[in-house]
Figure 1 (tube, rainbow, N blue to C red):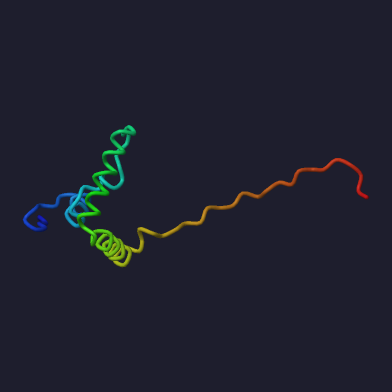
Figure 2 (tube, rainbow, N blue to C red):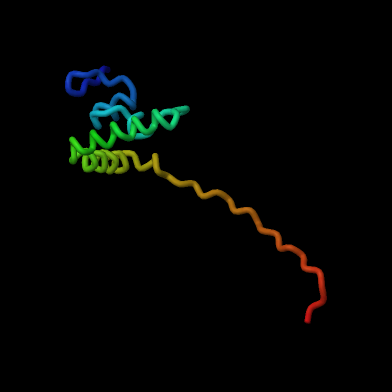
Length: 95
């Protein structure tokens, strides 16, 4: 089954996110190994997009809320076991 959004075929989860946001995910999250100059350019582009599209932040919040609502299992938290703390032995005489 093929999925199309606005005439574009979405093949992966990233495709759906990119089509929903209208921007690539990497613009907001960055890419591994980017240097300071690349990071600064990416953040400048992101600021320009937010300035030109003030509703984008609201759209992102709405999409995030929909994902949480439809897939709550993605946010299940498993508590990690706590390690027992050992008390340090004190040397000396009790008063």
